[in-house]
Length: 289
Image (cartoon, rainbow, N blue to C red; front, top):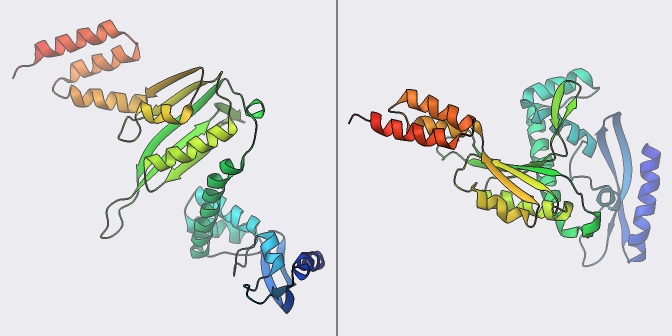
């Protein structure tokens, strides 16, 4: 592997030589790969009036000063996304021939997350897929929600805005998993998360014969019209509130009459509008003060 890297380095510098660059020095780099640690040499080139660079690092998109390969960083970030950093560090130490501290995993996760975000931002802009080649699915699900993050000392709680798209649910063994699921996030605003999701949907899907099913809790920034704005032309758009928030709102509005709140929840669940009206009328009659 070391020899292959050095042969690749020679190929990379040739195009720079043709542009007038000269070899400045030979630098060694040690990197941790999933199969072990490798030390390899590569050349740095320079040209008057230009910033010096290392062609091999640029070609392989290796992060400056990083001691871990992109695949190692991706695997570490995947492990950390399902648990705490310290547990991910323990698992890597236990199951591989190398180790990473929990603070290193934290830095890796931030860096990988930034790369993923940049990729989801730029890919739709470079997409030239014709309408006839875009994905056609019978149903596409879109969910939007805001998540309040842990309060930081002396600061207000930040909110993470999320828009998720998927094509349904499939069984992986006994476990249900979302099909072609993607999450678009922003700590700035829900509009930013919707904008990212919109660019991806436009570049990926032909929705003319697709039924869109969207869901939110109805909070500020997640109303039905926000979903309408990112869909465009489709066969039909059905928007609904999830049962938890619907029931929560019913309990709030009928907090003075628990018996009627239970009847209202039952009427909504049965999709019985006549019964809904009857419960409202009866609740009005039962108000004492």
